[in-house]
Amino acid sequence: FPDELMPLPDVAQFSAFAVAHRADLAAFRAAAASDGEFVSLARRNAVPSLTVSGFLSQSDEDDFGDEFQFGGSVSMPLPVFRRSGPAVAEAVAERQRSQAELEDFERVVRREVLEAHYACAAAAADVERVRRDVLPLARRNVELQDAAFDAGKAGIWEIVNAENDLVAARREELSALRIYANALVELERVIGGRLEEVRPAAAPAESADAAAAVAPATEPAAAPAPGAAAD
Image (cartoon, rainbow, N blue to C red):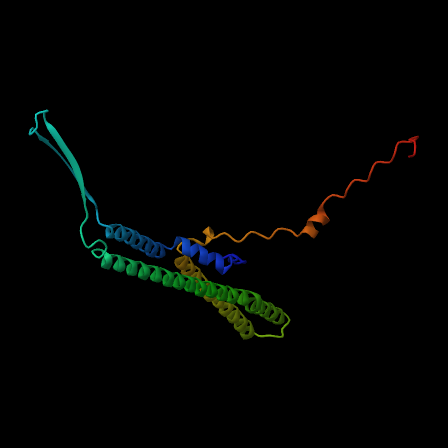
């Protein structure tokens, strides 16, 4: 790991990324959309189909030639709307259930992202604490014991103890880094993508006062030409 850990974007950005990229959440969303299509289909089937028929006949009963007769009919099954009512109600209930499951799972995803983001922040803070407080103190103690040994004011065991403390501090740093790495892996799992894909929020635009401060000054008005007549 580098000396400076990667700054994490805001948790809201990770949540938005997870909602858009989690494959399991996409599956819930597709199921809800499919149930909505079933509702539309059930409602269309609730209206019965019309049957249109026609006929044409010819008779030669009069003396003026053949007589043609034609006509048509329209039929509709009864009862008109009762046949598909239960199917529509069942489809609507299924769509509502799928939508509720989708919303519940979105809340689960957001909570997982919040917990993973908090774990990463806590692990990063622990790494920084070890690097800021524990390691420098252990290194300084080794330097002091070495100087004291050279001056004849410390023995070999003081140096050994100082070196052991430094080794323990480095092990503590490695343990903190391992926890931090595992937290990053878990955060990538819950967002459904790489951390590098989550872009930090753009920096806010400069205020109007700051912009005015860096803007070039207005050029002074040109002086009147010598000898110009006064008004």
